[in-house]
Every structure is written in C-alpha cells, then in structure tokens.
Length: 196
Image (tube, rainbow, N blue to C red; front, side, top):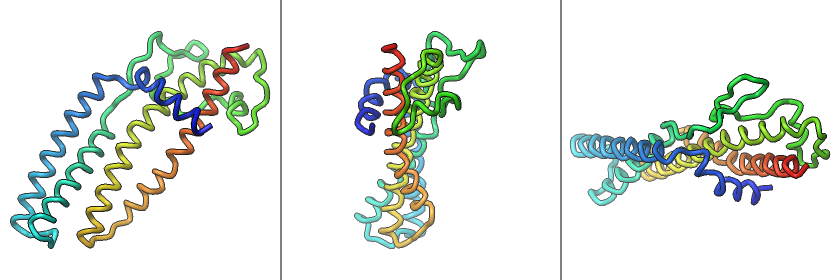
C-alpha cells in the first residue's frame, strides 16, 4: 500500500496542487529566507550567538535560513481548484479540507477490506477522490515542514542549543509513511469502485 500511495501521490500531485500557488509559495519562501539570513547575520555580527568561527557561523545561518524558507513554504496555501465543484449530498465540499471519508466508507480503507457494495460505489468514488486531494496537499506541505524542522534541529544541535520541537518534527515525519499507506488504501478502494 505504501508503494501504491507513493505512485498515486506522484500521478495526482499536479491535479491537487496548483502550480501558480507553488510559485507564489516559493517566492514567499525566498523572501523569508532572505530576511532570516539578513537578521541572523546582523545578530551574529553583533552578539556572536553561534559561538563558531566565521565559516561555521555562515553555514549555520544558511541552514537556519533554508529551514525558515521551507517552513514558510509549508505555511502557504497550495491546493488547486477542483473542477467540477465537489459535492456530497448536494452540499459543496472544499476538496482541500477532506482528510477522511464517511464512516460508512471507512471499512473499505481497512487492511483487509470487504468487497465494495454496489450501493456504496458512488460514495466511495466521491470520498476517495476528495480524500486523495486533501492528503496530497498535506504531504506536500508536511514534507517541506519536516525538512525545515530537520535543518533547524541540525543547526541548533551544532550550536549546542537543545529544544523539544525537533522531537515533534520527528514524530510528524513518522506519520508521513502512514499517510502514504492510507492514500494507497484509498486508491485501491477507488479503483475497485470504478471497476464495478
């Protein structure tokens, strides 16, 4: 299921994530990196907060600035618009907010799912498509957030300052494979429903 989730991610990321919003998020990330690097450089020159030689301090400032840029990228909206507008029971659903499926469909995302009942076919197709879009956006943003957190943790470890939040980043990073596995299960259910 992990491999199917990974394949689904790469096949559908272009539909779930807006290229225009990614470009805008990249611009925001570059601006955040520049501001962070300038601020940390001024602080280093004035206070020598890293306690390292100029070469080491430069590396730390660059790593932290890159981490700030990745976190800024993760904070930007990335989801694309879905056409046609997604609806469930006649009510519009924002596809970037769907992180789960209806309780009646949950059993089809189990490790050993039952065969899809014909009366659930339409609900499975709708719910898994919305779920797929939401999880792909979460994975895209979450990967950038984890990478930024890891760079910051490395920087702080070199400087000798320990914080609790890098542990939280590692916990979140541990959730990424389970999200891919669940995405694979949703895709399996969607394919089975589509074949009915």
